[in-house]
Image 1 (cartoon, rainbow, N blue to C red):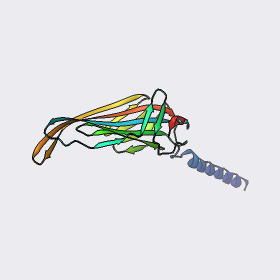
Image 2: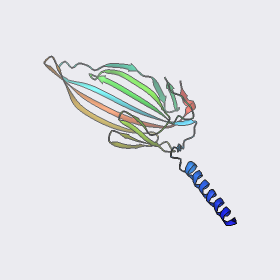
Image 3: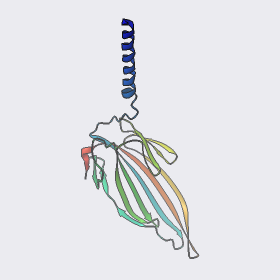
Image 4: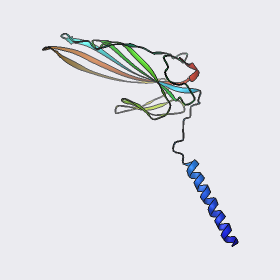
Length: 193
């Protein structure tokens, strides 16, 4: 009888230990974020399209005008229109910009987004990981990119756009520069609304 009670208590202890290990030791939703909660990483993704007339009466692209933020890299201060919460959960600030020049159009449009969990995807950009030192791992279209703090990645494409305007052919050379910059780790207290 004593052996049975002892065996039952050992079995119960083992089962309880395994249960605790399953519940607490295998937490797949654990947040591995290693940067302190008073800081976040700031990355920018800009697309600049320049249009150069080749021939004809090319219809110019749209005019855009909504620059919503500025970043002082020497002081580490990000200011502008901030429509997201700056709290302990904020991991990254993602700045998206577009600029049109020449016959492609005109103006600048920028916007900031708060990112609270990874991975994060928007259009053709996928942010997969951020290391403790601020190094960002991302995918852009088919390119795998790793950017340390204060590094940038640039991709330039160019092509000829042909318009048929009531039988009149017009051509323009359109050059698009995609630029992704990792501004590194910034203090959340330096994000000014």
